[in-house]
Image 1 (cartoon, one colour):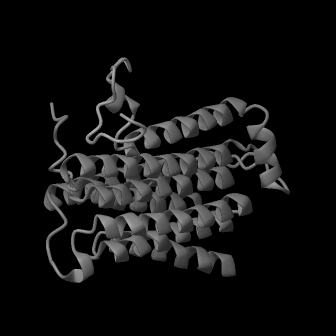
Image 2 (image 1 turned 30 degrees about the vertical axis):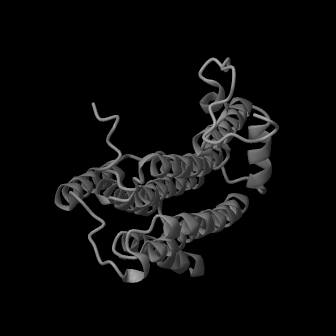
Length: 187
Length: 101
């Protein structure tokens, strides 16, 4: 009973906070609204019996939104509400499209003949997840690992202002580096 | 909550996120919409695990997949925003149109 009430409260909070993300005119406030919405999602995941994944989502979202708040402040369009401006474009068409998509999804959800649950939840879902990731789902795990590594490389490449290809040319064979100012050890 | 209600909740979050992605001018705000959409995927996967196949861990693997996608999206997204801003002081989606076909 209590968990059912809690699930409803979390569901309402998740949607309300999600809508508020795009209603606030301050990007810092929007970040915290998004954090609230995602924490409500994590709460629903916890209520569904996935303790480990729920806690992972809580921790990840909190750190992620803290990082995001820094970027928000860096790229804020309306700092401290001093420059009121519209952050939206093409609102009407987007609202119509999203309403139509929601109607489509809701029709699918409500009319689908959902299969009945097979089996019962294991005593320790986290153990099952670990065994699955290290067993039949090892390919998923390896793909995720490769994707994470590729992300590290991609972010470093994108964030580097001047790399060795800028200095030594595309084939890295320039006689001397193309630096904006001379300096260093006798160059 | 029943499976249908949880799926409706996920659909609502997904559509809210999509609205943000389509309407926001700031690239960073656009990414917040994407985060909301992936949050909806996480919720739908967890609900499907609990209500359709709890004995099988595949639903949990989808949650792991979505959580990882969220982290990657944010890391690469911020790197792209930083690179865009560095090349031409661009932080709006309409300004970043070099690749428009």
